[in-house]
Amino acid sequence: MREVYAGVEEVMIWLRLPDDHTEFAMSHLRDKGSLDRDGRQYFKTFWFWLQTHPGGPDEGADESWRRARQQAMDSIFSRPWWRCVWTVQEYFASRRTVFMCGKFSLEGDVVEAALNKLADRSKVHVRSIFEDSGLHKAMHKASQQLGLDYTLHRSQ
Image 1: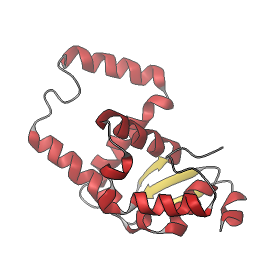
Image 2: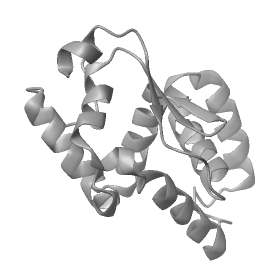
Image 3: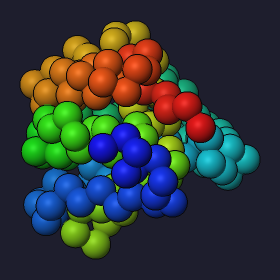
Image 4: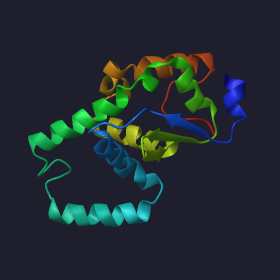
């Protein structure tokens, strides 16, 4: 499989049809991962946000919003794609990926940056964030089969 995906310019990863939580999940991942792609605009937005929420990232985020965010993340990361070794291989071995869920799409590097930020912010390993989804096991197996270190970073 590695040879197949290594020669492909772009892989579209289909996460199935959207549900009620997809738009929230994809926009949250896009927001978290956008700093690496457009740092200046993100900084301006974040600076404005800090002026209106001086207590920090979770100030003003009531419990129902946090529950909705967790439900949205669970919805995206519990999809079958994350549990299959060969599908995670397509991510690691390809040059460029785009995650698609219905009409919503995110480039792979944005998803990767978002996952790393979520892990850094919570000061826990990504494995503990998504352990129920099987993401850790699938990524670990795929990285072993491809001879890679297990991280969320792909070698370019």
